[in-house]
Amino acid sequence: MTPPTATPPPRRSLVARFGPLVVVLVAIGLVAALSSTGRNESVSAKGAPASGSQTGSANAQLPVYYQDAKAEGDLDQYDFGPKCDPATGRMKVPSLYAPPCAAARPDVKPNVSPQGVTATQITVVVYVPADDDLAASLQGQLDTKADTATTTKNVIDMFANTYETWGRKIKVVKLKGSGSDETSARADAVKVAEEIKAFASVGGPAQESAYAEELAKRGVVCVSCGLSMPDSTYQKYKPYLWGNLQTPEQYLLNLGDFIIERLLGKKAEFAGSPELRSQTRNFGVVHFEQDPPVFSGVEAAVDKSGKARGYDPAVNLTYQLVIPDLPEKARVLISRLKEAKVTSVVFLGDPVMPIYLTKAATDQNYFPEWIITGTVLTDTTVFGREYDQKQWAHAFGVSSLPARVPQNKTDAWTTYQWYWGAKPPAAKTVAVITEPIRTLMTGIHMAGPHLTPETFRDGLFAYPPTGGYPTAPRISFGDHDLFQNPDFTAVDDMGVIWWNPDLRGPDEQGKVDKGMMMAADGGKRYLPGEMPHTPANVFDPKGAVALYPEVPADAKPPQYPPPCPGGCKPTL
Image (cartoon, rainbow, N blue to C red; front, side):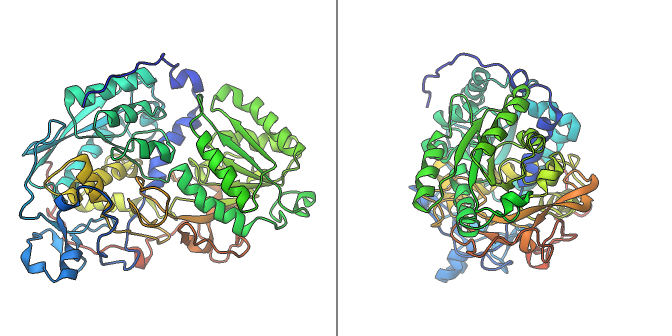
């Protein structure tokens, strides 16, 4: 598959466009870490429900999954191997993420593909950010490049030896990006597809979608390849692009339910000024957009569906993430919100703009409600402390992120330590590293010995819906009657959050200070359509949690002896 590559005019680098703002670097480094999720059973915390959502063309080539064989009474006909736990029907990994046990069908044999699949190995590219990529600038601030590389290799090695790879080894090829602009991203993708001939790539440029799109055009699977993309992009390039957090179209379903069912038509009781608190909510939207626009289709769909349900914001304002322009842009936006008599600001954007928006609001003596929508890190403690506290004391909304536990209690950390007998070298970003690799290796496991992008898709679609606990968001892929289109991203549900300006505690980087993001109702999560119709229960300390000291008992995975006493040895 070698389509011609269009070479558009080069863009200025991200550093040139955005400027050397440390807070932006921290944002990029934290986003995947904070969005890392645990998976446990939506039906049972310990067992695996029968597979579903096998909505593809390759189902006859998929392996047999344990729970399906059990339901059919055919367990004795298949060898699920010593790594299978018959008590749970999942692999013997002490993780809520463990996939169902799988056995190859007798009539399905290993395939060979010119795109990275032989009888003995699967070629996978690990993308390393270019020097002018903001993510590269961040690496030294969180974990060293050497520690990141070691942890990445070890996580792949761990999954390759605990999940099924069907007799194949994983060949890891590290590719350092040649640049963060569109032209460089496309050239790197061509190299991955045509020279390295990889089956899949993990990671990509931080804010450039061209790498993922070019790989998809050339038949290469791309997992967590950088830029947030609308669902239409996933559908256009299916089955090649995969992600972790919801697309805008997906999370707007839950956000819409929250606003319409719990806020619309009621007084703006959480605003900062008595004048606004006495008024019925009047919403105004501020959202990020790119040049050229990529979210206009999303905006039109929201406008249409919102009006049908009685939601009609007074203003819908946009901005672009050009750091030097943000202070003045924020002043203009706040002025327009005030003129429109907005009581409740719905913010959908990056975590930097609220620094300027909240300052401008205080400077203009404007104290509305701030509705958090769960977009990139605006729902975190580390950034909440950066915002004007006179404003953020009135911030609340929804989030895809799980309720927090200490870093060394997270699934990524404890699974790594179980296998290797030591803490991860990249201690601050082990979850960033683990999540896309987990998706990749789960897809390979679920696909069976006949590995193609289509069996990879149908295997992930067959992964049982898992999670729904405060510390473990609901995970699924495919069609489970949640979204309009087949789902190529992991997280399905959201929780309600609010900002407590007075509580002291550690942020996501371990710094203790005042100001903590709170999860309402102990972090209870809602799928689309499940949001209560009662008034929002925010700014109520009863039942709210900032940090669980331990993973709750019902979300703890089964425990197994380490496969290598004292720690395993690298095999890659």
